[in-house]
Length: 241
Picture 1: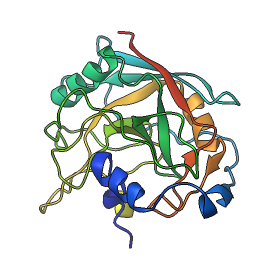
Picture 2 (picture 1 turned 90 degrees about the horizontal axis):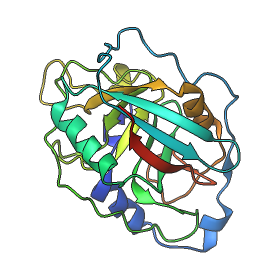
Picture 3 (picture 1 turned 135 degrees about the vertical axis):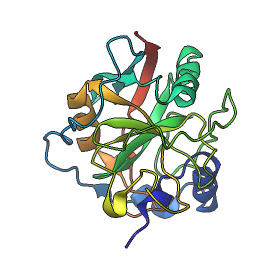
Picture 4 (picture 1 turned 180 degrees about the vertical axis):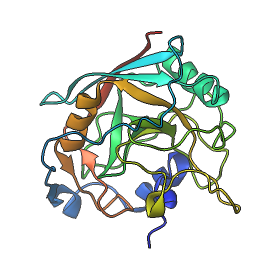
């Protein structure tokens, strides 16, 4: 059984793994194209996701790949139960940090991950330098009563619990049980991944992101992961409420 929680590494852990795999040329240029799944709803948001309230902060991500992915994804954030994580995310938004970054990882039936690298990223070229963070790591809020359900948004991190900075992911499946569980275990020493909001508008855009062309690459350490190509770029991230 795979330990999926270890797949959601980000920041230095991921960049180190990618850097260790080498640079451009050779087999990287001939990596096979991943066949996109059939179009359809990415998943169905659960009614179990608590409504964060009509006055909760919202962020609108404008995303595009120029060939079929284009639109807005609205994230409604839960500042009451995940105050540290929400404040951190909004700080990056307000600084314009996410503008021009790409969704650098699609893990089918698992997550879409971004917020760490500016584009373009091309299969076969050396992996670029991670965008410099404007803040340090934050405390992990994985016990706030929020769960990694379909269309929730959470922070990526390294295996160290208090290591999240700018990278985030959208759950494109219910990742709260079984081998894909990203929640904090009810008992034992394990830790989870901090949910701090959910997609409240633009689910069809998320679906388009999951069905867009995506290139496999030996640089990725996890089977099935791929780099959306053309890159899916966050052209702007704006606080809209």
